[in-house]
Image 1 (tube, rainbow, N blue to C red):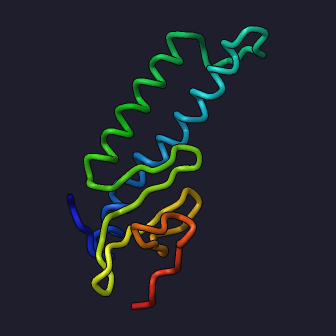
Image 2 (tube, rainbow, N blue to C red):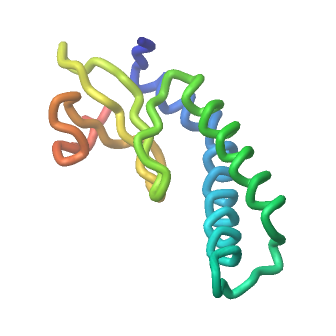
Length: 122
């Protein structure tokens, strides 16, 4: 398992940010296409089944690319990423949630998101 320092995780987040932004856009397109294709769906200018399958394939590619960095993709809507790390001798996950400006949070591995705390300054 890859362990990140806080600066390494922040650099990796910055590097993959374009893929995360694309993932958010494709996720929205896929949701709209799926709703349009449901019986009685409202229709959409985005296309049909072929476009939905293409969006799903692109989502898979983007998810695989993000996970290949060593980050853990914990949620898709909203996006939730954890970067395994160690702080003060404890195993933690540096935590980024869609909408966060940067990587400023962490939680102990055993506590999960409910134990989320702001990273110490410095």
